[in-house]
Length: 349
View 1 (cartoon, helix red, strand yellow):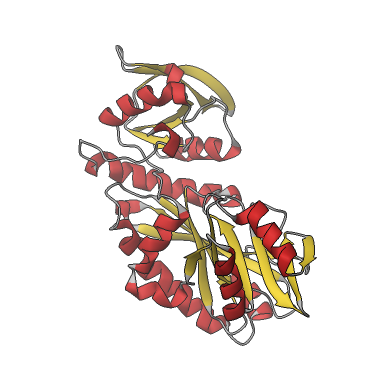
View 2: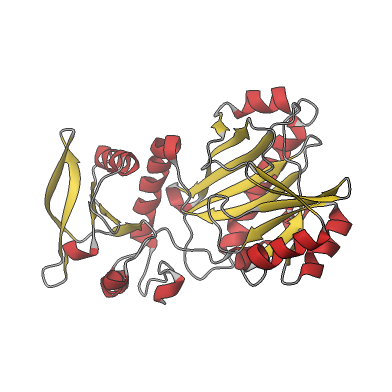
């Protein structure tokens, strides 16, 4: 029997965590949620919450063999986290900033065809030159999440069209400069060519490729599925901003990408086969759950928009939990001290 602890800032159980605990118990293990304040190093005991007979129960447990870190650390808890990490392997490590991830992606030769060139946007001329070159561009803050702070800019009918979600502004050159100075300059923005990821009826899409480690520590494709934005006025689709989701991706591709679905399926297989191992090799610590956000156009071309560590799993909670338990069983046997981790946020390092 193994013991798996879920470490987070608050000792509440989400549906996802309850599912993980139940799956672990079905395999003969113990699992519980706990916080840094619940840890006693003298006795190596933890007061955690678990599920028993369908009800939440709080009790004392032994130290876990593996810690699932929820990637949120309070400053006052830092020392407890670091002390635990000396004794126990942590999962859910960070992968770095978007810029760091982009640099690592460029080193993976087998996926270069799926990458979009990303450039720093420091000066107004950087934006003007990109618009002249690409006609339409995307501006992204390096520290954005859930699609926040993203703008599209294009030159159309002698006006610069700037969109953020469903907000649209038409600027002349001087007004665009004012927008740049106010919202973009010195705020760590990058820019890239706009990639038209949309269905054959012009609905914007983004596809999530969810991969996790499973049995034997090997990577497993959990799910590949699209988010669809039914508002044609929005250039950017993001799963956290109300886009529709479908889990019947095969039917979706055949219906909405009728001329390219076979090419798309081959490319998805290639990305899964080539990406995770090559990406992992660039880190000293283990990665265990990654989400790739992909754009797909009607010709079947794929662009990797973003890579996320510890992405939200929602409806995939059960297959993810199964893979996690398999992986944690392997990790307990194969992780050897000193354990290498990267779970602290930048402000606590």
